[in-house]
Length: 96
Image (tube, rainbow, N blue to C red):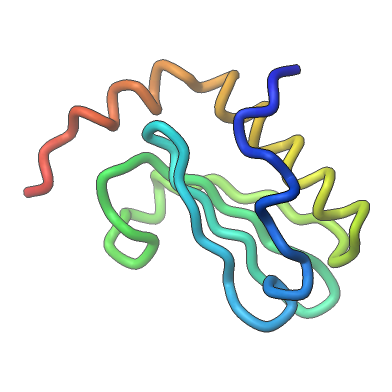
């Protein structure tokens, strides 16, 4: 598997305190502390998390530890690769 989003750019200690938000070539993502686990969400550009319709968001949950963070990064990379057409199309969406 190609590593599009490198795990060393995402700090677990940050996620424990604040949501970590990023994007990669049309795919936006958020990792946040959800109590006992980490909630990971992806959605297509161009909008931020709040302005994006719920039906466009995809979620997964992982343990809130180093292994969970690694699994979350692997999931993000798999989702990017598996839905590349969606992410490519979203880059051209109007901001209206």
